[in-house]
Length: 322
Length: 156
Image (cartoon, rainbow over all chains, first blue to last red):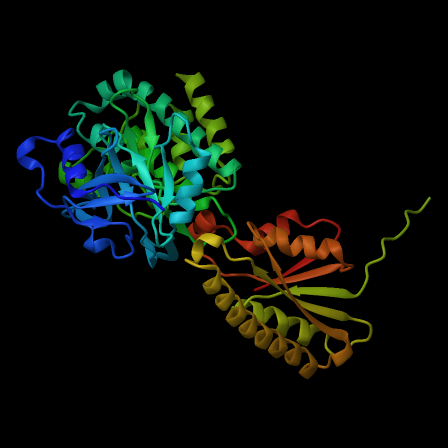
């Protein structure tokens, strides 16, 4: 039988890692996390005898809206070694997701994330961690905390002229992004999909400088092309990176951009009607080979990537053209 | 020297799901071939083995599968009756549902065909928009592109 540390023990452990005035006098201890809402700041979760001090809930970035608490995802301190962790508690949900006017069924799966964590252990372009069951067999994932910004924030805050960005920054970013696509290829080759590819699901690890995929617990009820949605996500990230952010029709209109009149429906994102994909019309120095890759994600495309290998081949060709 | 003529059999595989398009495919075969001698039809539904991740417990998965099978059995029988109503001999119409791990439904349908002797596969067109087809893929397009040693009818 596993014995739990006493409150006095816990106090001693906690005081090693946080300032004395923040050490709680008493702890609420959880060994069953089924009701994750009850797991709160300053509580202790004990998993297989190892105590974790719970800190804040993680937040979900929502474009244009205030970030939302993810009550099942907590920051936590591993009280044995003081490392900061992300603790993902079990939350099953099924929901209809929309991209543009297309609706499809999504679901959250702790099992999937646990499986992928095992698969990508040691891979430089993924978050790392492990899974462990609490006493009610809830499959909890303990993730290493990655210090660094989301790629979306990094690129959106460049604050420079696009041409300067393109010639001075983009090539380096592109090299990292190609590694990210290779990482997704690795998942697909192993029968897994990321499930929620977004530009804020890549973190730039401050220590290693690597781009690392996070959040693998989303999944979707696939249709014929099992990896199609992941590929669409990669395309959207790529367009964002080339454009140094989203190039929106609304903004071009507001600026009275000279290329506005040359844009047609075929130049827009396959699904998002307000985003320009044919970026060469806006930034003429973008090479044809790169623009051709972008155009696969446009409404004018007559062929869509079926797998990451095809996308990687085309990206390799773009590199040769630079 | 004349080439030997390829012999096509009169066995037809109709791959169906619960959609209207699939029913149209069955109806088409009924109207087109009903009452003619020698044609044998199998109406096939491939039950995609649901991903383990979709269900919190295996009990829930089993419950889902039981309900799904009941629904599919009823749909298959309904399709069979439609063919009989159109003049097929009941003995010439079989139904089959099979549970398979299906990363690609089209490939599952085609491997069913490979295991049996059908010269013709019939599917309904799903009526997907181009962007849906891009994002999620089209079963009928993939069946057409990947089918070998058989003819494919796509019913609009």
